[in-house]
Amino acid sequence: MSNSRTYNFSAGPAALPAAVLEQAKNDLLSYRGSGMSVMEMSHRGRDFIAIARAAEADLRDLMQIGADYQVLFVQGGATGQFAAVPMNLAPQGGAADYLVTGIWGEKAFAEGRKYLDRARLAAVTDPHTYVPPQGDWQLSADAAYLHITPNETINGVAFDTLPEVGDIPLVADVSSIILSQPIDVSRFGVLYAGAQKNIGPAGLAVLIVRDDLLGRSRPQTPAIWEWATLAKAGSMINTPPTYSWYIAGLMFRWLAEQGGVAAIAQVNRRKADKLYAAIDDSGLYANPVAPANRSRVNVPFTLARPELDQPFLAQAREAGLVNLEGHRSVGGMRASIYNGMPEAGVDALIAFMREFERAHG
Image 1 (spheres, rainbow, N blue to C red):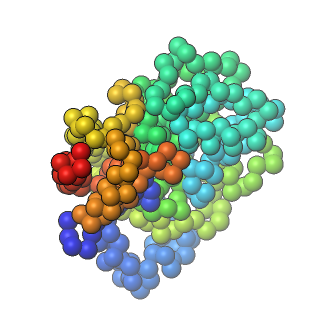
Image 2 (cartoon, rainbow, N blue to C red):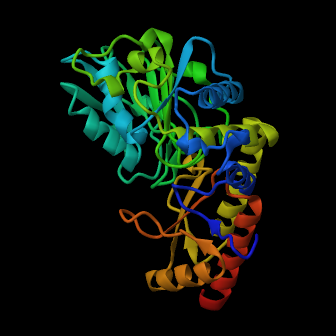
């Protein structure tokens, strides 16, 4: 790590690889001799159209997305899709099921209730420390979709297996795990993800929609949220977040250079396993999540003595380890270790935790 760079464990906006930042720096004033920065280009111009098409093609290759799915680059983040999902998939008076295993699932359900006469909880956990077995879920035969959050960034809870839901479209917020581990896109009707964890800077969301689910929106759905309209316009019914889209393209190419999703998943598993082992072997740190449902990318932990929280954070910052505060709703600590976090950063965190425990444990 250079003197000017920290190890950034933020849950999002998250760390980006140095190679991606260097390429963006090189392109900043004049992209490929154009005399313009990408952020100054017309989204209708030849240069940006080439950037956009390459990014989509690279994402399709990385995730093995079939030709029967649309890939859309949209605004509003994942939170925007909390409303767009029911507006596009459920008719007026329709029903949908939600499985809630964390705070983002709660938010998706609360937003869905605004647009669904029958928004139903298939299951909800309390506390959010596990994923209930599918045999305990209450699924509805008439549901327009089942919504899940396969990885909860705040609570650090992840699905160990995907549900079997038959012909009901499975919809998932994959903001925190997209491109960090293989996802069988064919198992889903809709995938959506905010970019600011594994894809690039905030301001962009990626939406993957199976073709047969387009054209179901309600007449009053705003055009900016209407998936079929976005697909027909190539995600450009208005000016898209062009610079975020460009950085996403750089991230896709960087990931391909690392060997693709399967290769980075091995690194991510190794990072997570060693961090959980450090927590479990400790007398000072603890993780509350059921081992089978521990997230590989968001690792929350608490200190046995809460009065040590602030000294821990202060000393971590001095050591170049930043943004380790847990979400304000749960407290404690959280280390987010997405693709952009090098393994050396996790090693540095573990070494610091052990030294802190020797001093304070």
